[in-house]
Length: 57
Image (cartoon, rainbow, N blue to C red; front, side, top):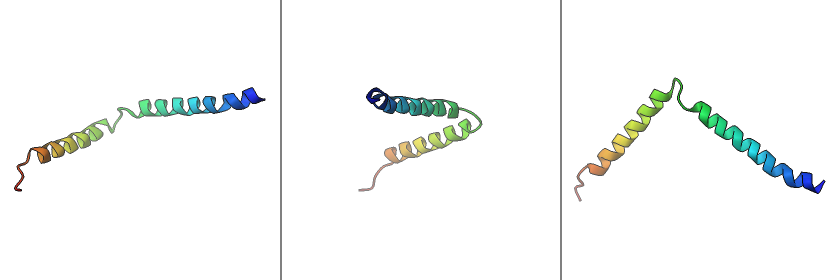
């Protein structure tokens, strides 16, 4: 039974990792993709504007 107790943790971790990857892949795109992309674009534009703004030190 030692071999069984040695194999269970890696098999369980592999199953959870596979489920995680499948969930991530399935959540890409879809109806909210444009909204998510707009949020990221706005955040990047805000960060870029803050970086280029002149500082009045």
